[in-house]
Image 1 (cartoon, rainbow, N blue to C red):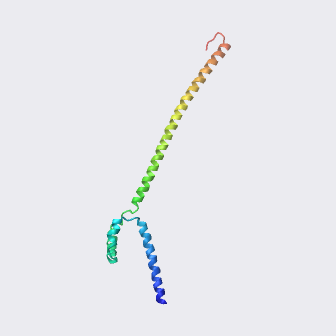
Image 2 (cartoon, rainbow, N blue to C red):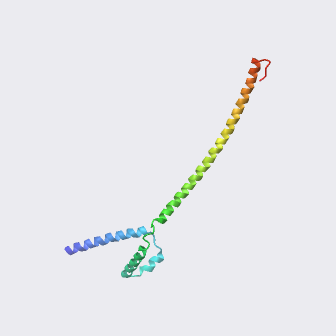
Image 3 (cartoon, rainbow, N blue to C red):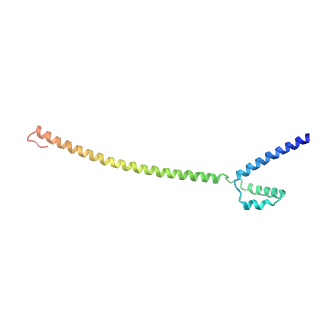
Length: 135
């Protein structure tokens, strides 16, 4: 009974380690089939030796930012979004500037029209008030 409990406990431990390792493999992403076929025929001891060697080689790169590619991709997307937004804002600013110019022209025309109208009416009123004078 005790031996059976030990075996079940060991099995549960191995199953848990297998699940953890599978999760780590999923995090790595898809491996090319040619890489898988290179190691499929190797025995466990050789694979563990290769794993240790690879881990030693990876330690040389511990100073490298492992998230650099993700950050680059993220920053590139953000840059593209910001450039599009900048173009949109610049187009909007140009449109607003054009509208302001048009409104300035309309304002100047309205002021000139009003001035001419007031001048004409002033002349008429002045000639009525001062019959021999000129405005």
